[in-house]
Amino acid sequence: MDFGFGTILIVILLAAAGYVILIYNGLVRARQMVREAWSGIDVQLKRRADLIPNLIETVKGYAQHERAALEEVTALRTRAQSLPRDDVAGRAQAEGMLGQALGRLFAVAEAYPDLKANENFVQLQASLETLESEIQMSRRYYNGAARDLNIKVESFPSNLVANTFGFSQAEFFEIENAEDRAVPKVSFG
Image 1 (cartoon, one colour):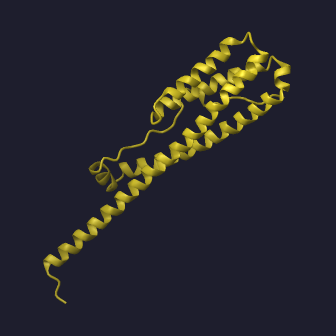
Image 2: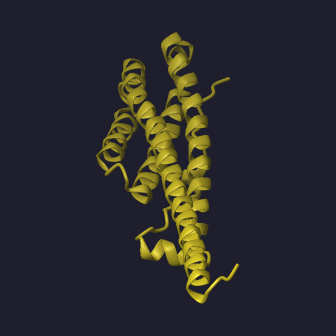
Image 3: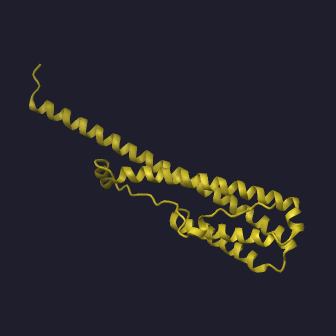
């Protein structure tokens, strides 16, 4: 068999094109994983936001003079929900502040033994504790997916394909304030 220069060049170009396609598909997959992971966080944050009005109403009945704590949670919930769905940094900051406000609300509730014994409050408290754990797991999953995409966007030679086709790094879902990193304490004993 006589392979001419043209045939060898075609084989090399086909191999290079195949490699670019593999890299491109890997980038698409990584980007979709980030989107899926963000959707998971968004679902958990929505569940928490939906739980908050019930919690506020339950606490209101027992702690009417604790209006400041109740209003803060309500305002921060509204702020968190008003941010664009894809504003990762803004949502992380707002949700961190909301988590701290919920922690303060539960601290206020400590002063009301009847409230702590209320079955509805106990159920809401348990639901919130579960949701906080699920939010933390979702955040870890999202950040792992973002890390994987970012590695592909920055690494050679996939960075050449990423830059050519407009792939960009994903933001991590990070909480800036160290105090905001603490999961609100929602257990009474």
